[in-house]
Length: 375
Image (cartoon, rainbow, N blue to C red):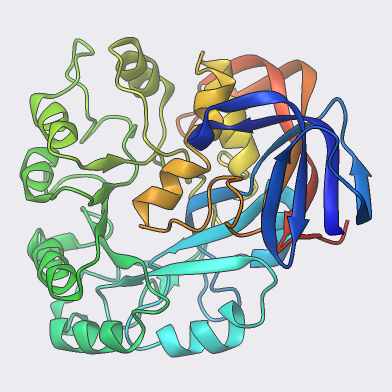
């Protein structure tokens, strides 16, 4: 007997090429089967008329709640956003990663996988009241400490996070990124690179990124945008994709613009990953959450299956996890039940430009570890 069966939903699993009405069964915390007429089960949920996907993965979040000023409550956020895995984008550094692990990650229901910040205290002063870039002062960056703490936590961390730009690294320029790349090389993990206002410039950052590294905020508006003044994708951006750099949305409060998004997608440059960059300054807009961010991409013409691909298997591959992002039997028993609400919705970007959409993704249920997560 299965522990749980979701009956009669439209199952969309891009990793397996599935888009069909089917049942999904779970047993012992894992996906057990996908197919028609599955059962019996200790718990059966009729999800006919709904969409069933692998558990959504938000690749860019900040969920060190209570330990840093930027963090939001992970379980509350995940329930709202329909997520089963949250990738924390470097909220904690070597100095406070153990606290993040013990006080938040271990106690949360939702799965949390962190990038570790190259800066020793992580993102320590990001709030409406105080804003200090963690990479502004090179005294806070200690590559050996980062490498050593990383080695002790390789069972948990998925990479090194580095934020550069006028706001994040100030006069430190590219030095934090070069340090982060060296540490990541020694740990065998990718770097997630944030770029805000220059300096440094995009043209300096892009050539440094390696195959498997992640450029977050990949559709940021001018300045340091990935498009030219006449809307063409920059040559260094195309070269980065060709060598295997991963392009992540990381919407946030200042890093997603429709002008950039529409121009790039018209040229066939869709994002690899859609993520929210949810934090205390973006959770009430303009990013809101993963489902709102996904709905924005429906509004600008990205097909539903590709939106789901960019929120399931693609982020799983970006952090080199083969146990999630799909409903393949034997993988983690995580799934998201969605509905598409029809109507007229106004979706803002970070500059206040509004795009109207006719569809809004809503969470109708979450399966976590093979069991229906509390409503």
